[in-house]
Image (cartoon, rainbow, N blue to C red; front, top):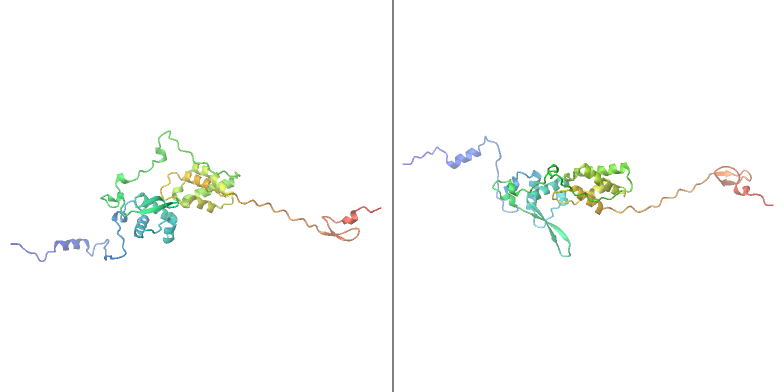
Length: 289
């Protein structure tokens, strides 16, 4: 005969009391069922171990957008307060881990456009451990410069424009422009050798009456989201391909004509203009015979 224990809590009640005890801290969910205007987000994104919080939030926002919505950097920067640099870095994170994919398409008329594909479950997210990628799915990282094989020669950088002046002040200003690029995009951290190679090209822009801020915009606007394996080569290409023409020639302004002071002629007392007092032109002429 079975013995009943009415005072003993059921198994389900014991489990609830153990997790939601009022004396315990931690998270408690107050959930309501969504029936409209909701997006399903996998824990592989929401709890991703390698993505920044900004990238996770931006990936969630992108997956909630309708088909055809614009998600370029400028559009997102106008929507959120984080700014162009941080949003671009977050997009690169999402692309690196497979949540974004960029495809180039040829549209009627021959024009090439870029389409961005949002993946709500990239291949790396199929790992049993939520938020972690299998080692085999991670993209290979480039070897540091010190790990290159002995004797391997690095390809020379493209030639950049040369300025007509080699004034030290002009080259210093060009170097300052290049050193400032990393503040706007961390991928543009240049070595001393790369800076020395690119500085004459920037100087050629500066001596054509292009402001340092305009040079910076020409070098960093519209950079691709994918990693830059050799940023100095890309900057060298832009310095050459986007070089503006020299400013229009302006002839020098002629000096103003000299206006001499007035004097009274020593002979006829008539007023005349001359650099020094004396006689007027008529009185200086020899008398007729």
